[in-house]
Length: 272
Image 1 (tube, rainbow, N blue to C red):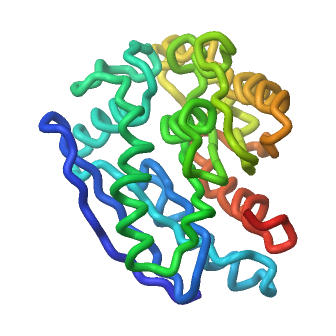
Image 2 (tube, rainbow, N blue to C red):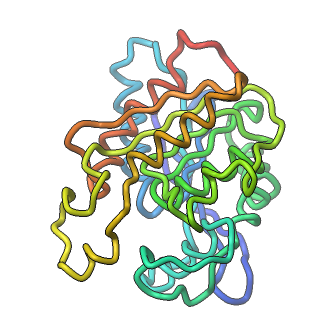
Image 3 (tube, rainbow, N blue to C red):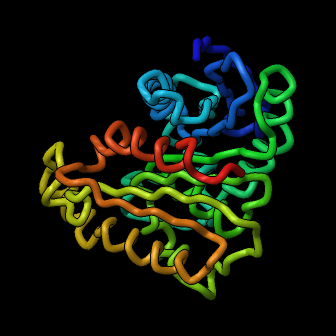
């Protein structure tokens, strides 16, 4: 699958700017995977998708990767806007380290942006299958993906969340009462976390003592296990979860994405 890259932009709120997205262009009709935090996830995922399919002997369905990012290259704005756009509630957390300049709790706008603005445009100019949309993300993007799966799943068939920040708002997404599951059709879900994400004392890079103190009690492995158990009470959700050996937050995305693509898009799995 020969691919090219093209950028588009969408306007956002006056404070914090809008979003931009880019897509690796497939030559024939493909499923598509929208990736949040595209400035962190897109390039690696798009290249791995291309390489994995090249060696798949035709056993991986064509996948078009679409990366979605804040419309800025300024590091401060990137951090502030993703904290707003990828969190489902207005809450504070010591794990963010600084108070987000644009606040938090803006995740509700993201599914609408994808479904009403980005997807119709991308699907109008590329041979993509609108019945098989995927959503994926890493860290806060993984949190946003998991929240969409529970609360706003309409329009998406596959979900990919790597090291999701399930600690958000006192473990909001692990609470049946605070985040009930919305009725939905059948879906495929891939979840992953690094083995070393069970403690800030086991990861790399090595955190300063003050930072380790701020992150004390954080166990993303246990959080993902609890979330997986919750999903497995819903028979229409086909969930596959992995704890990847010797991986940590800084290294987990490249390690997980090829496994996720094969799990979600291998040709011998039932089509959407």
